[in-house]
Image 1: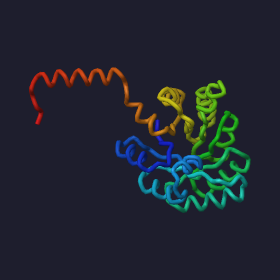
Image 2: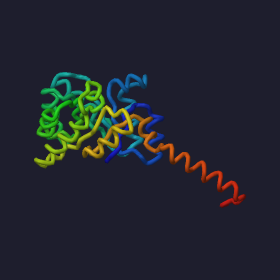
Image 3: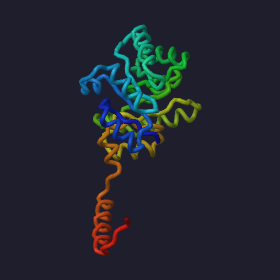
Image 4: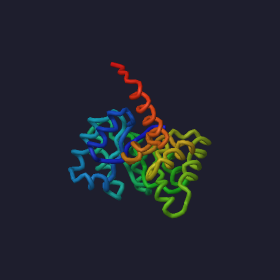
Length: 217
């Protein structure tokens, strides 16, 4: 499974990219607002940092507005993915960009039927929001599994991008359910390496090594 980081904070992206853990980046208007910086400037800087896809979201809710904004965003860098809302106008815009060879990420997906429409429109990625479904006591992972089954049934090439990831368990369960990608907050990605038994083992190794009085160098 590919890892995208869900942030617009440059320092976090640099850190994770240096670890070799990043396959791409997703942003949205809320994340850009938190950064306190100019939207297009942030997108351009991120695209220069990572080789993988960088999702940049349109703000317009109309078809014509999405086309104008999406073309503007796609011109920023070759690895920009135009992020579109899962509405009828968004799906129409998705088909337009697909015909032009511009990658798209259709976002705010909450049902298998929505995901089916996005695949038919030629979306590069579909973003089901598992955490927000869990907030309503609906199993977000069941949605991932349903989309996987539908896409596999018909050979759709749209990649399932598990979004609204809140925990390490979400990451694991998304991978088990067959998500192609998970877009994850920086703190959750770094937390995947942590385990109390790993810490305990390293502490014991360090004590045992110190007792030998040796040095490798």
